Image (cartoon, rainbow over all chains, first blue to last red; front, side):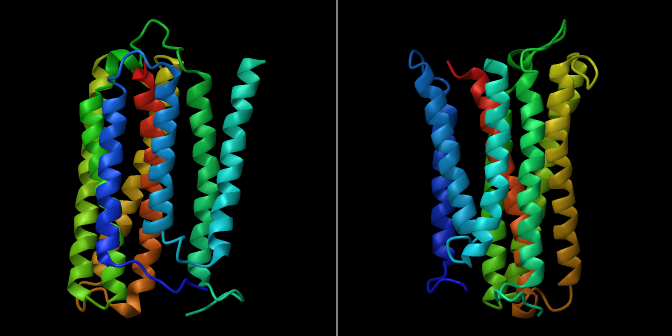
Length: 92
Length: 191
């Protein structure tokens, strides 16, 4: 069932502020020159962090029954596999 | 309230199953975009068209709408009936602003020579972002229906599950945009 702690309004404001800052960093990063593949890794990292924050806090997965997280994870797994498969096909 | 044998409300679990399947749907559309990336034909490409400052602003709006929706759910659960209504209204307004920006973007791209049939880039771009926009539009309608639902007594504890389920859909739409903004827009300009 649900976790012992529930987020407060302050928690949501905090997460919102972090999302704001992470997005600003993403936009600033593409202006950086000369760091090549690192930019791609950084962008994926930042997007993943934002994804995690929205799913965990706003969508309440951190505080909810684990079955809901697993339900979402199955769809995400197939989504990732489809994307990876496309990349492998295009490479080979 | 009906519960599954796990103790989770049926409608909540159903929404998560829907979200899970929609993840696969959007992955398929994204793959289509990535496969045909660079197929601009004689027409304009992403680097000719994308306006990162404008899209960044609409991204901020959508992200903050997710915050507003989380606060709406929290308020409903705390039985702060009018406050929940106000946060839902703000979320819907921000969703409409996002749609306004996307409408402007589509019409600008069209006037620059990119249509759904002008190139494979045009087809995959409009289908991918258009389906996302359609999901946002459905979300806005859902939120407006919540406002109507709570027009007399607000959105209190007895309606908190309804607000939460609408919120889960809205956050999913936001999460999809997090991925699309990065992969479609930002990576185009990554050096």
